[in-house]
Length: 397
Ligand code: SF4
Image 1 (cartoon, rainbow, N blue to C red):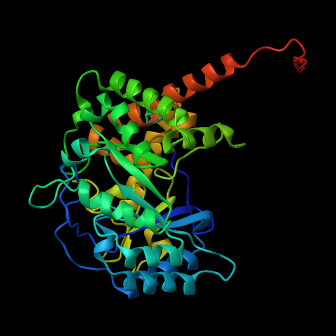
Image 2 (image 1 turned 90 degrees about the vertical axis):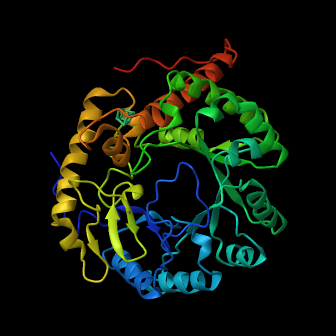
């Protein structure tokens, strides 16, 4: 049964605040699910200030709290806007709290002026790049249908010249699965050493994925296993986010005791839209619509309080169903301790209900990734030579 929540129990719950400075995007990728990417409205600094006061006023910020600026393309807003927004957050934050900022960009607009901001603020930069020009340009296109790879690589050159650390988010579709070596040759040649893979998902108006094709799960495992082998063999190695996250989960003292992940825990992630609408659970829900949950908004910064959001019919209806879905996962899935019940947005848009378990997304992004990383760990353990001097721990009890 959905846990009863109150303002006290939610203190320290929010690990990620997703801020949408604009819904507008300057390009038009084939797999984009953002419905308002033609809307040029920019978030007001007053809305930023209200978001900061809401989060810090309610004490929602977790010890590893981060703000990410994302969705549509955050660099269509000016660097000076970000300076004012970051100042607004600093002014609202408790004196002893330093707030890390991150930004996820398509990289097309990065120049020296943006690098000045990244250096000055220590913002973590993620660039969306789907690998080589052949793979990337097939899906990441301008509004007139031209490939964007060359422009993104120009942006990455600015980051490299200015010494700005960055990571890559690479969307994996069916065509990527046969191209592990092409991808890793490219990342190594470009000295790209930090990569995360997002799978091509089914969300909102995007109702199909090339990964639904027969045989994708096996192909994904082969792709991911080869990618991990290449990443380890590279000098210096390429960090693969999925492996790092899974190892961190296994090494956590709380492993096996986690009940939820950030996407299915109430207020684990809070998303603020350009207009100040508030969302929780999967950030992709912001901007989507559904017959049962409307636009998924649980309030607006203009007048909402944490108390009013907790009693809002949309929040209560979502939480009850999401929690029931997590319980079903816990009862039925051998991967629960690594995945903690999956992503609500994928359950809703693939299975038509939050109150469900397996999705294409989880079979690839959680189950297949876990199978490959655990097999790698087992191989590593088996390759450690047995020493006759090793002491076998005495049995307990
Ligand atoms: S892997 Fe899928 S079925 Fe298993 S816990 Fe995660 S979401 Fe649920």
